[in-house]
Length: 69
Image 1 (cartoon, rainbow, N blue to C red):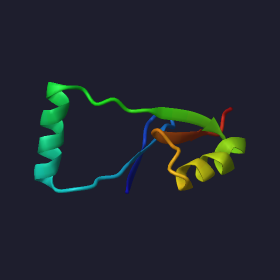
Image 2: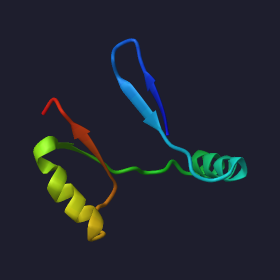
Image 3: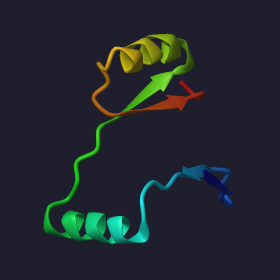
Image 4: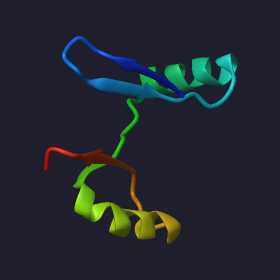
């Protein structure tokens, strides 16, 4: 995992999975048909429910925790 802090205070966290060739193939697939990503922004009080949903396989994408909510 790599993290970068921008000048505006935004923290960007990135992960990578797979080989360079797999990344090339993914980029090519995205060029043909853009990938759809589901992201749900949740508050800190919703984290427990989100973890349960993840454990049960009921998550339809990624969760982002907002501490400003």
